[in-house]
Length: 136
Image (cartoon, rainbow, N blue to C red):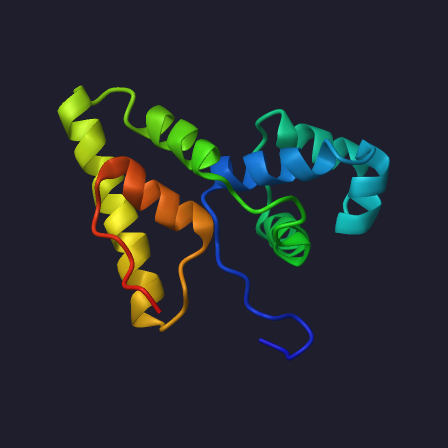
């Protein structure tokens, strides 16, 4: 792998499609296709469910990776809605345990890296009654 093309983690295609669709919604399809380096029809076909070739997938992943998080940081509301969707098929007690486990994992991850957890992580831990971050 050359230095000019850094290794980009491979996302599952449905997640990649969702991330690309969110970015394409912020600009025109033609502008996005120019930025990615694929045809507008190729991009449209991908967004409509076509499986990308490996070279196209690499371009799409690099394009999404370069954009990073361009919006606002997540809020506890965003995370709660996402966890609600993830745990929709679980009984309420198990969905709550899932949320608490994720909150505790986030807190532990920030502590391990000796970083202060962002506000939304602290709020999530409080919502689920998870172990709170240690004060700094």
